[in-house]
Length: 296
Ligand SMILES: [Zn+2]
Image (tube, rainbow, N blue to C red; front, side, top):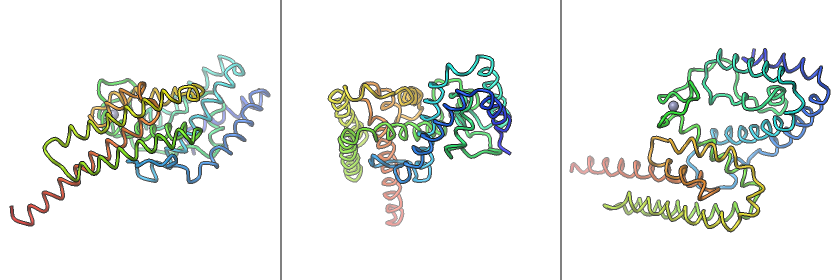
């Protein structure tokens, strides 16, 4: 049984009684299903060097599209639901979440509106249901939804994956801009790898400079494409950047904080920063092992 059973039942009755809502919801199921099934294989498009494992990226891709479908549905049906039904739905969703105890990031259904739980089932994008472990979160955000001064790595990892998936989703609509941004990110990642291999005393500042230069190139692209980008709804992308500007780790934080200025590609750049750190760790691990072998 899904932890959302009571929400589903409430929605079924509501849809039966509310003809315009039923029609809007059926339309959203039809178009949403098409959007979700069109996603197969596109989880890493546009394809820059990422830092997220394939399976996690795949579910983040589906989740990003489902979130957009649900957000559009909520906006389109806002006037079709009475305030009382709306309040009741919110109560039921909050109760289901509280009982499940999986934290605020496990399910974002509450950000949509009545009919959305069944819509999500209809488009085949329901997140894993059933009992879940309590979230692994030291900063408290996943338990309370209250923003801490600094996010813990576990929370920030989930948010980064979402930010990247949302960025790719937005960019899929602009293949040319996506290609330009991918080129900047690929070059940045390549040069970064070369610098890590060379090592040296100033590696950290070389790497930071490399990423800043990538950021300046993204900002130029943003200005050049300002007109086409003005049609995009960047609200989710922006809010994820805002959250990540509280990442306690210095790799992601500066890129999230400068996202408004640099525009799309910022999430990709943050991923490349994470990759760079991993490369440095790998490299120093190898050096250490070599020294041990050579008895130095
Ligand atoms: Zn946390």
